[in-house]
Picture 1: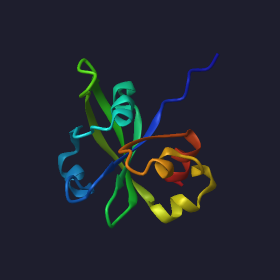
Picture 2: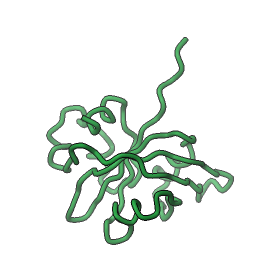
Picture 3: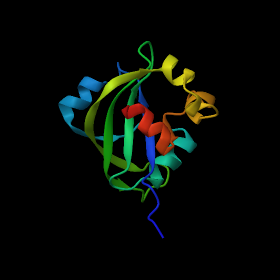
Picture 4: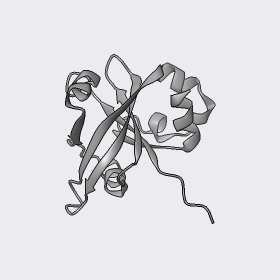
Length: 131
């Protein structure tokens, strides 16, 4: 039996609230301010090493970088404390238009539930972001 693949997610943020440049400056941060129950559930389920994509919302609407979860404290189920670190810059940032045009994302919560700030990704979707 093979181990299950590590979960992958996309984290959305408004660049005027917490931007890619802020993240680079900080190198690590607590991902907070998430209130949607589904997004909170995703945060609670994360483990150290969980991979994620950093996505700017607003006018930019572009995935720009990877990151990884450093630690998770889910002792308060309504407000999990998820510490994350910066990963690598995407070779080719992916715009919302390119995501919508990619068949891998048909039916994805990223497109179906637009206000969801923490979105699960399949391994195929993760690989597409890295290509």
